[in-house]
Image (cartoon, rainbow, N blue to C red; front, side, top):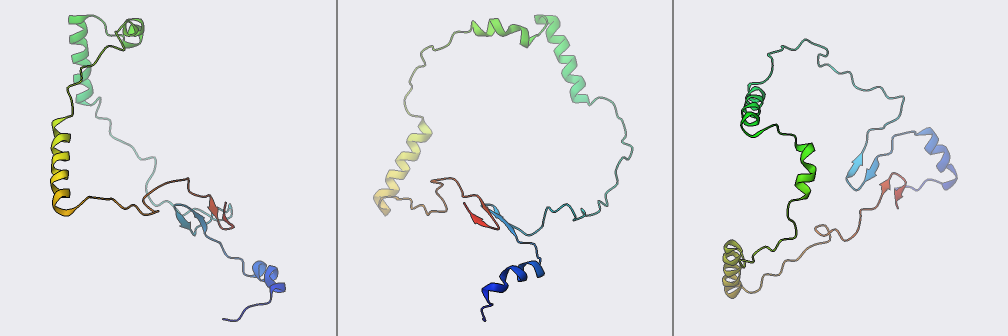
Length: 143
C-alpha cells in the first residue's frame, strides 16, 4: 500500500466526499441523516377506512361487572380513597419462615455437583461485565 502525501489530505477529503459511518457502542450505521437525502417512498396505503364493530365485548363485560359490583359494594372511586389507603398499617413485622425450599434444593444440588466436579467458578470476560459506561463514539473517535 502506497502512502499518499499528507499535504493532499484535505483536498482528497473534499474531493472524495463519502458518508463516514456513525459509530456508537451499539455499532456503526452507514446511512446519513443529512437533510438532502429523501426518505424512501412509503408504499403502504394510508388513510383507508376502518370498519367500526363497536365496543369490544371484553370491555362491555368489564363495564357490566363493574356496575354489578358497585351496586353490591358501593361506588368505586380509587382516587378518592387515598386517605383510607394511607391509614393502612405499614412497617408491620413479617414472619421469617427461613430459606425457600426451592433455594435450599438448588444449593443442595450445587454442593453435590461441586463435590463431584470441583468448585464452580464463573469466569466473566470483559464483554460480560459492565464495569463502566460505554464510551460515546462517532466518526471522529471515542470520548
